[in-house]
Image (cartoon, rainbow, N blue to C red):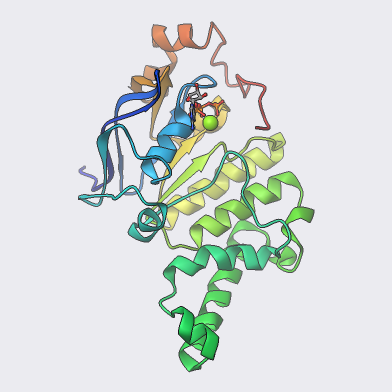
Length: 267
Ligand SMILES: Nc1ncnc2c1ncn2[C@@H]1O[C@H](COP(=O)(O)OP(=O)(O)OP(=O)(O)O)[C@@H](O)[C@H]1O
Ligand SMILES: [Mg+2]
């Protein structure tokens, strides 16, 4: 079976002064795939995401999406079809849950500023559609009953779900999740697994960073391991778990499926 390649990362390197945080990383994500990215703290996982989404301009390498090299500008990356969540939750704390999703929708509405100021029929139609779409995403993520709550009043696990709803509002073809279950209890984590499968079933590919090995190996078609900025191995569960370099990198921490190998839920 051949899958269409959505994301094609070639030789991405990110240096900060003398530190090479990401070193010559290649990675592909195909249509309909869920791909995992794991590695010890400080391995360069978030930096790699920042290189994919235009927050950082890679020192070397290219990031292509659907066959086109992406310019390193976050709004252009979003418009091309890549959305993300953040390891440190970035919601508008004093806006409602619904409003936060509407912000995510913004990149997809064609109505410009003038139209918004004049509040003409085009604007009203676009706004009604955006609200409908935002409410649908809140239903999908299980947050509809909290649409009018301020996001800062949501429990932590629900804030993570809201970040996902907001990312989905830009109609991505690829969703990047940076530690989506950090701070969640086991029950919320299982629900998050189901949510990721449901996202994939909508035709959205997923690239996910996690420390929770059970979560990763339950979900992912392939998993890549970053250690000190380098991708040392990539493959299925057996390939990754039996790799000596991976075991050494995690200082012998066993991949026994009991969950997190790292205790840093909050960063
Ligand atoms: N803007 C920056 N300037 C300088 N160094 C940075 C910057 N961003 C990240 N780094 C460094 O790059 C390395 C990789 O950090 P990164 O946050 O990508 O790791 P990570 O794999 O996401 O770790 P964690 O699992 O703890 O989230 C670290 O040594 C970090 O200090
Ligand atoms: Mg990180």
